[in-house]
Image: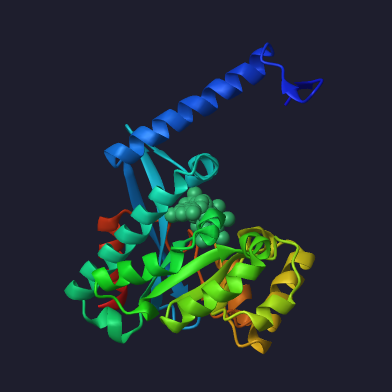
Length: 281
Ligand code: C2E
Ligand code: CA
Ligand code: CA
Ligand code: CA
């Protein structure tokens, strides 16, 4: 971005001006979309790599803008900057829980096999004093035990909020809710938090998985993360598995779980239910 003296934005730069307009436009549209409820949750299977059995779903947010689906990578940053993320996240939590409750009622086996629903938490939510009580209330409202909900937070969020994180995670754990570190390996962080925080597991970032069948370095990184996780008694999920070579490598490294297009992309609620029927019942 171009700036001129005193850090003022040079609004006469046409490219800059267009970017500002796009941004404002996106914000207005996002606000409208929230009012109209133009969002959907898609569900991506998380699979036990040894037995190939289904362990749970990760709920991934989509903006249904007319005929197009907009990726969260586009609108989550705007939602975070504008504070709209709080309302959006509330909607995600509520909907994911409602869907899980519905499926648990329809397919009682889900509870006995410990099928879980994972949701993504934004960094902003970590500074919300009501986060834990909101989660508790939503679980209660849907008569869900905490053990069926998993929270995914990125490594960088955790590092930003290390002080409050400790308390929040302990409270969530007391409710039975499990916590996974998302995009593990991408942040610069001290590893001591892995030992000290009440974590359930880590998700190895897709960037390591995508090259592990071609790059010796990435293979080594994945191996190291898996050994670390095992030593700390943490669960481990490999993200973005796209081919059988990656799957075989991960199985040989005894990676417990995985997720990726090889198994299924994020699915509409209807397709996710069909997947459930085929893989659990
Ligand atoms: P993430 O949590 O790391 O989610 C994984 C992303 O990788 C998803 O992108 C998923 O569709 C994609 N993916 C899964 N398997 C594969 C694969 O085999 N290959 C490739 N190339 N990609 C794969 P998506 O759904 O576009 O979400 C992007 C990010 O947006 C998420 O990254 C997450 O950080 C954020 N996000 C999604 N839903 C929510 C939400 O409800 N709340 C918040 N705060 N963030 C969300
Ligand atoms: Ca995630
Ligand atoms: Ca991730
Ligand atoms: Ca990511």
